Length: 260
Image 1 (spheres, rainbow, N blue to C red):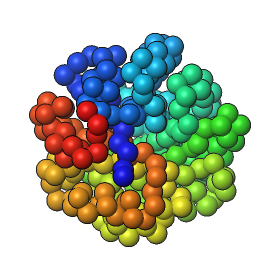
Image 2: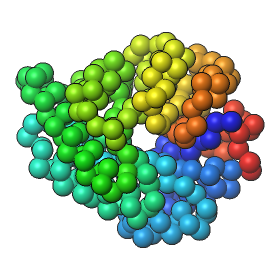
Image 3: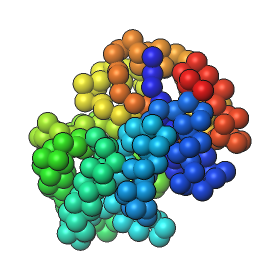
Image 4: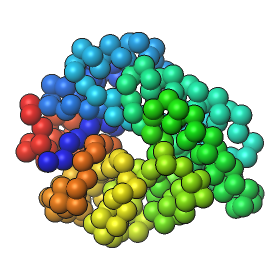
């Protein structure tokens, strides 16, 4: 049976972030993820996880100035030093939170950048990060993101991600497959999940259009959840969607999976 993690960046916005751990646990979630932990003391977050018996499933590497519109720095040639410093910070937090995997956001490609330079930078940064993270017992993920929501995002398709992973050549680098993003970019969800299962270590979900909860759009999640089980995926599925209403009231789709 699929196991779901509440994305606390997207869900439970009715309450302040520190209170979202309790809200998620109350609704039956056993795992949580969120974009970034760095604005909070790592010990405070670890205490929230322990108090509410939650597993920290995922967070991202530092991704530049999010408020200013940056969406990662992994491919940016002028930011290599900042990227490397961010790897150290991510290891510090992930270790304190017991988080076994972190995601690297590639970033938005500058309009005047040379494609070869972007690819080389991203590959070299991933080699650096994978080595440091593996030594710390933490898995590295990369995630293709649709270019409708984030125009110019460098990593946008499954095949592109797999090619980059091959270039990096690390046994600690895997694919984070976001169903919503890949529905928008390429479709073929069931086939992609099955064909690349060995390289996928995290799945995220939202429906399309709207990026709301499963059951609000065109994706057949009843089929997809059964399919994910049948092909043998046993990792977490992150609920990275925007609830159409109050979070708890919009969890009907998950009633069979959450033990409230």
